[in-house]
Length: 155
Image (tube, rainbow, N blue to C red; front, side, top):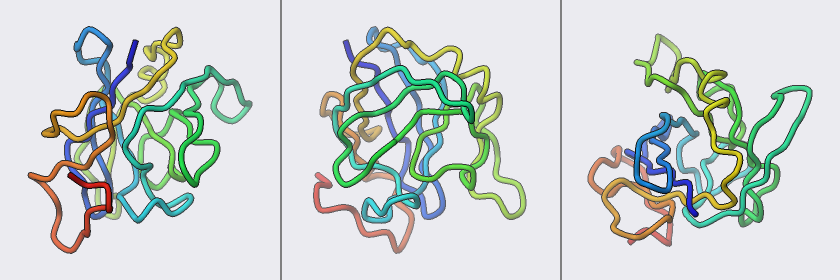
């Protein structure tokens, strides 16, 4: 059963999206860094289907860990409200916020959203809003920001 992240757009400063349950119902909003060629700590991850593991750390408490992300390690779905708090990971939020001066992306109530994450699921699919591909992380071709070159796997 897949837990799906659908990216709304590939932005210059952040990548907003939404998480959906296997039945297709909306769960929470998401926030990631922009696509910067999968560079460690500064880019969102490539689209794909990833194994999920429940994980605990003193810094984030209980959260989810995406396994076997190409060229990356320790990609987490954890509490964060601002894109600047992310180092290539994904932040869930109950509400999508408007960026404040100096911030590039915001989700609110992230700690509450993490508690809603379905830790019983074993797969996470990441894809673009308008791609018809099941559970793949593709940037949205309809809302790209100027100057962003799509990754080589872009449809």
